[in-house]
Amino acid sequence: MKKARANGLPPKGDAGPVTRFFSPVTRWLFINLLGFPGSLVLCGMLNRVRIYGRSRIPATRNTLLLANHQSMIDSFPIGYAAFFPRNTVRTYLTPWNPAAAENFFGNRFLAWVFYQFKCIPVARGRRDLKALNRSVRALRTGTMVLFPEGTRTRDGSVGRGRPGPGMVILQTRPCVIPVTIDGMNSILPIGARIPRVGKRLSIYFGKPIDYDDLAAQGISRETAQKIVDRAMERVSRQRRVIARVRPVRRG
Image (cartoon, one colour):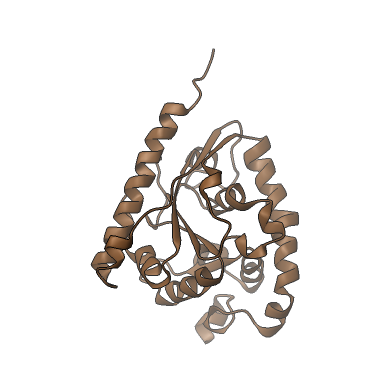
C-alpha cells in the first residue's frame, strides 16, 4: 500500500470513494470537453486524417479494439474515431485503455487526471496481473483499446503481439476489432514531447475476428498467443491496404 501511494496511486490502484462518486460527471467533462477538442485539433485540423471501416464497430459493451502501437497517445484518436459522438450519450462506449504507470501515474494529480480518461496503469518490464484483472472487469461492462505489441514502433512496422490481450479475450469473449493506426509515429515519435503538424494519419477498423475455434481449445498461454497472432496478422494486412489507398503526394 505504501508503494502504491508513493507512486501517486490510491491503494491497489483503485480510485477512492469520493473520486468514484463524482467520476460519472468528471469523466464525461474530461473526455468530451477536453479530450475531444484536443484530439480534433491535433488529428483533424493540424494533420490530415482518414478513417476506414468505422461502420464495422458494434455499439455494444464487451467490444475490444486490438491495435498496433505507434505513440504514447494512440488510444485517444482510436477511441474518438471509433465511438464519437455516440459515447457522449452512451458513456460506456468510451474505451478503457492501458497507460504506462511511470508516464501517466507519476503522482496523485496525474493519477486522478488519467483515471478520468479511463486509463488503467500498467507496470513496465513485468507481467502486470493486476492490470490484466482490471482490464477483464472493465471490458465486460464497456469497451477497451489494447496494444498487443506492448511497446511503440520506431519505423511504423507491426511487430508480434504478446499473449496478455489474448488472455483478456479468453476470459471475456468480446467482439474483437483489429485496428491499424498509421502515421502517429510521425506525429509523435518516440522521444518527442510536442506533436508535429502537417502529417498524414490513417485509422483502419477491420471486420470482427472469428476466434471461436481457438477459444474452444481452452484457456492457456499458448491459445492466447494464437489469438493475438491471428489479430496482429490482420492488423499487418490492413497496414498494407492503407499503403495502397493512401493519396499520392503531388508536386
